[in-house]
Length: 174
Image 1 (tube, rainbow, N blue to C red):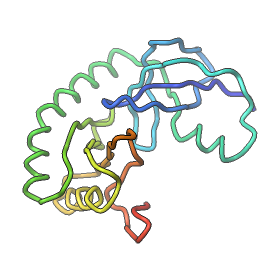
Image 2: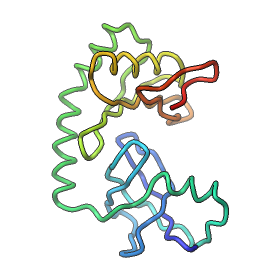
Image 3: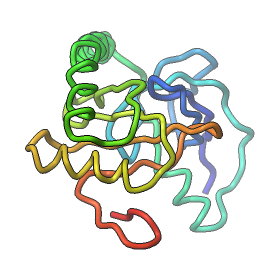
Image 4: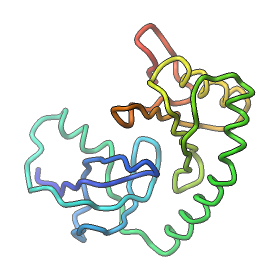
């Protein structure tokens, strides 16, 4: 099965993702699109369309389908994004205080809401591990909703730690 594949920049920390596009229209560099990610709907910027290729293995198909372009952004989407960005700016110092109060050994560097305003993403300077898990669990215990803690290290964005996860010796898994 042939798909339109794109390279996109998503989130306040500029994470690069490869994803499937909708059949029409074709998107070009600089276009803003609404992207379905494992975190929820987010606005992303098209970096480039990747060469046509057949996705032959289920692993490659699963990887590409974790993020999928849903539609071009509308004026409503852009307005929603502006409002959520303002909300995130207002919430930033509150979250820094919570992290300090809870004695979690991470440094908050940014945060953002998914486009529907249902999920908060906290970007922290840290490696993936128990402190990120502690933050996610503490936020859930306080009734603050579903959050994703996304560690940022010297090598870039690491896999997210979702609230409600269980931890074992290998780290967190949902």
